[in-house]
Image (cartoon, rainbow, N blue to C red; front, side, top):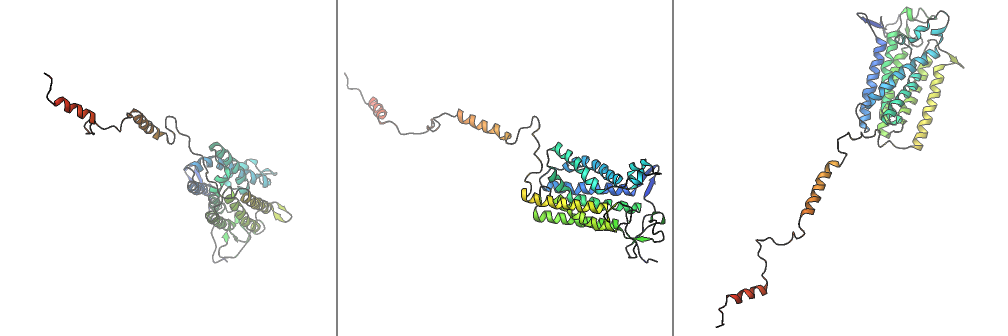
Amino acid sequence: MELAFIPSPSHGVVHLGPIPLRGYAFCIIIGVFVAVWLGNKRWIARGGRAGTVADIAVWAVPFGLVGGRLYHVITDYELYFDKGKDWVDAFKIWQGGLGIWGAIALGAVGAWIGCRRRGIALPAWADALAPGIALAQACGRWGNWFNQELYGKPTTLPWGLKIDAAHRPEATPDLATYHPTFLYESLWCVGVALLVLWADRRFKLGHGRAFALYVAAYTVGRFWIEYMRVDDAHHILGLRLNDWTAMIVFAGAVLYFILSARLRPGRETEVEPPLPPEEGTPAEGAEDQPAAEAEADADAATPEAKDEPAPDSDPESDPAEDKSASDSEEPSNSH
């Protein structure tokens, strides 16, 4: 009998009248808000405008949800399309089943559309979002805890996760505690976020390298955590499909990081183009133009003889004029 363990929720959904409130959905929503909040702060710090991250996330999040679900359904198609299965369950996203690989891939397509509409380079936006995405994954993994899914092998460790009999593997129906792989991955994602924040501050990563670092670091942890899981999965040469995916994505991220550092070193000096002047608003510097024109007009209106003495001044008299005036004052000698 285990003296200590992590309990699982007895219910993954709470009903507020006719409205179901699902723990899995709440974890995903909280993760999105965390990613947008942190991404917005980082975007502003790099010279972008407030609200841009959220505007682009409006495109990225729906694409990401669809991509995550597609990856899950395609790689676990037998859960929905084998004999005796109901294919309608493929649309029940609230029951769990989002593949991060598909979420990132198709989410990037949505982000590219949003960035293109704003005249923004996708790599710069991805760099700002990278640590926030890692934290979003850390939050989202707790949705597996609510659903009692994606746990690891049996264990007697004090932090083993207790799984109800209805959710245990068929091979070990009498074993109650398993490795909490959802917790391992959640903690790993927090570490990845801290790593990216530190590296970005220390080395001024740009042109998509902060995002590449997040991808590479995440796949390292995902590889060994995936290896611990006992849920059904396709295997290739003895490894789970997601292990192969992690290795391929890791190699791609490292290659991109190296090539980007060589071809485009440093960081972007401008991440978002300035807003065009509104109609009726003078352009930058135009407010100084009327004053300059007025000063020029004043100079043109000033007489060229502005240096001549004023009428009340006392200039030296002309000697000839003084002599003439003196002669006129003497008595006349004519008879």
